[in-house]
Image (cartoon, rainbow, N blue to C red):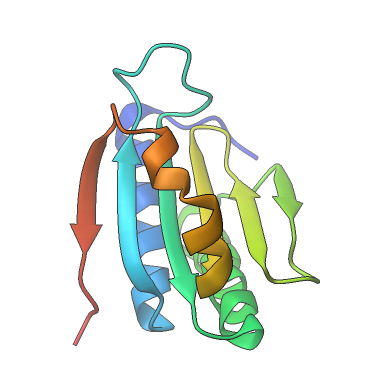
Length: 124
């Protein structure tokens, strides 16, 4: 794993969002936490899938594309087997991929209301 610079962090965010769009992840949001005191990362990327299979496919696509296109690998992964809430931690960028009902229950975006939020549409 290499340490991200600002430009490579933004490239990673773009690669992650594109990967999610490729697999039709829903309600994709980027939370820019750089100006939030005590934030654990620069960005959170949040999305959901409508099945456990789709959640796993989104995680796999992000993992594959980030490594292939940017040489980035997460230093930590959680939840891939269960596929209720998958976390891919790239240090400066943390990806949260939820099964739809889990996303509604945890409402993680609400916990970071001070973040600058960008919403992304599907690539059509």
